Amino acid sequence: MGTTISGIAEGDLANVYTDETPQADETQAQINNQRILELQNRRDTMRTSQDQFTSTPQANGVNDGTFVSQVSGPTNPNAIKGQGNCLPTSLVMVGREFGKLAKDPNQSQSQINKVRQDANASPNNKEGVSYEEGATAAKKMGLQGKVVTENTDELKNSTDNKNKKVIVGVNPAILDPNRGYGPNEHHAIVVDSVDKAKDTAVIEDPNNQEGHTVVKLSDLEKARSTEKNKVLEVST
Image (cartoon, rainbow, N blue to C red; front, side, top):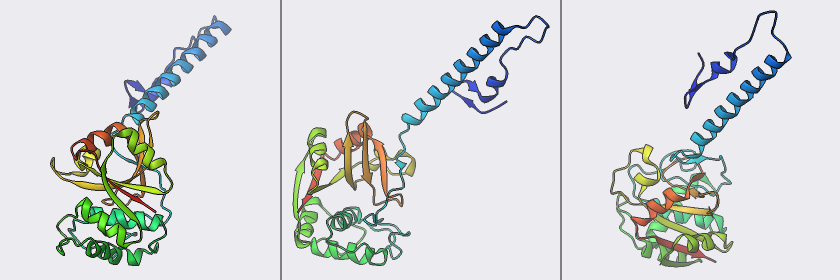
């Protein structure tokens, strides 16, 4: 028996009734073929539905050298363990996207450290950096930083603006429930684009190694609501 998808086994496609008596005719063959098509269509529809409604971010493999992780890996081989640098790391990605910082993995951690320093934040890497401190660091990078709140439409307008990047606050346990976050943690990510019609958003999460990832917009909004829809707008 094959793998079952929503109650339809792969083997069922091979188990359609066939009349093996001498009286089997063209009409019976047509019925069998139609039944096979119905099973295939139903199985494919169920598979598509299951794929669409996953809550886990789906990597699309896009990384043009701007993505940086705050944890050790190919994009940041010199990462500090146990750091609370999600916002500085997000700001490094934005700085690279605007051409303010080099796209060099070996410089990633030093760039993160510099952003934290420019933000006048605590030198303790285990402590987070506020959005207001991030705005200060953005200005020292030669960009404009502004802390605001944005609803979904405003967030979409910001991501549609080529001269603006947005860093948003989220509850990571809502956005990525399979990663083992606590229920009251705080996290910062970059949002690249919003598609309301498809209920999707493309994000860059500094706590993974996957580059640009696609999440459900509705999940993103739930995760943002616990952070009062706070946004750090960074523009040229």
